[in-house]
Every structure is written in structure tokens, then in C-alpha cells.
Image 1: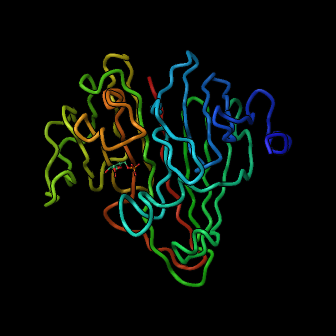
Image 2 (image 1 turned 45 degrees about the vertical axis):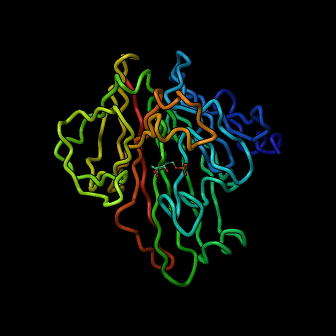
Length: 295
Ligand code: TA6
């Protein structure tokens, strides 16, 4: 399989394929700027995003499981067609399905792009009776861009939720703030009454469990990772909401694939369509993206 992927989609010095320690096939993208990204074919899961100095900007749990049909705790899980818990497995089946590599390209000098696809199957139809095609394009240059296209290949409309459940590495969650959400309305999902609250002040500090859905959030927010002296920018497009999540120590114990103290080293900032579903007519498509950068 790896040899075939290398033959079809490998690009010298820019795109290569290998298996990770658990035997999962993955693509490694390297841009001229020296940034590197690993993408698992399983789930079309961006696993790491490294600076030229080999610092990983994405978190991946030391206890992450690499098992067919299981989500990986870290990187950028693709949420589709369900957000969170519900009739389908949590956050839907896209992140635990085996995608296909569709193409690789260099859309601009020093920029590299890989596109993966997921078509409906008996397995997905048994859970969710719709014909669809997903395409995820991962483009790396001096930024990391992820574009998700959703096609309705059937003869009846369907609705979906979607998003990028991105785990960002931070030196210390208590020395971090998220900028850009001041004055915005959010749902505090930790509480059973799911109250609508307003974010004050502008800098969102995390000193306990946080699980908030910011409605109609600004398209740009920043993660001020103070101890790493680094700011990560999250720019979303055609995605209304933004979820901020950290389980803190209180909820970490519920996750077998998360080390006890690891909550201190990540924050999830998730461009997502959560609050209002998207309905797609037959033969229609929907496109959304996130562009990540750092300084
Ligand atoms: O995006 C926040 C959230 O929905 C949390 O409520 C928590 O469940 C988290 O996602 C992780 O979900 P997962 O299914 O990946 O364990």
C-alpha cells in the first residue's frame, strides 16, 4: 500500500508516505518554509504540524489509541455528520473511517497540498442512510490550511454538522488566553441548563473545565501561548460557531486515552457547525475551511 501511495502521490522532498509506529499509513508533507505535517489516512486525521525548529503546534496524547474505527486523541479530528454525542458515534464517523488519497499537488512555489476523500459505504449507510462524498484538502506553506468539501450524491436532501476538532499544544493551560471572543455569546455546555452567557473579558482564560460553544463566532481568534512566547491564529471560513474545550483534571479521568496531567498542555479551539445544521440538496455541495498560522 505504502509503495503504491508513494508511486501515485509522492513528490520528492514534499510528499512521502510511511506507516507510524502502530502501522497506520500516513502522509508527511514538507513545505519549502520547513514546516511539516503528518496526515493519517485513517480519518484524514492531521496528526502533527511542526515548525522548522521541530516544535509540534498540535497536541497528541501520549496515550492516544491507533485502532481501526477508533478516534485519535489529538491533532485535528474531522467532525461529520454529527457534533458530539447522539445517534451516531461521538462526533460522527468521518474521523474513524478509512479515507482514500485522491491527489497531491504543489499549488504554488514551496506550497504542498494533499487531498483525501471519503465516499459513503455500506458501513456508513447502515448508520446514516445518505450518499455523500467528503474531500479534505490539506495545504501547507507558511500556514496550514484545511478545506472540507461535502457533496450530496443522493436524490434526497440531508442535513449535517461538521467541524475541525483541533487540539493545540500549549506550554501551560493556566498561562494561555484566547483572544477575540470578548462580548460574544456562548453556550456553557458543562451545565445541564446550557445557559447562554456573554464572554467577558476579551481574553478567555482557562482555570477549570471549559466546554463552550461560541455562536456566530468571529472568523479569527488567537491563542496566546505565553510560556512558549507564541501566538497561534485560527481563521475559519464558512463556519459559524467555535467551540473551546479543555476537560481539566476533573473530566480528564473519563478519557482512557488522555494522561492525567495532559490537560495542562492543550486547548481545543474548534471551528464547527454546531448550533444550526446545514441542509444539502441533492447534487449540492458545501465547503468550509480553517487556516492555522503562528508567530
Ligand atoms: O468539542 C467538545 C467535546 O464535544 C467535549 O464535550 C468532549 O466530549 C470532547 O468533544 C471530546 O469528545 P470525544 O468524542 O473526542 O471524546
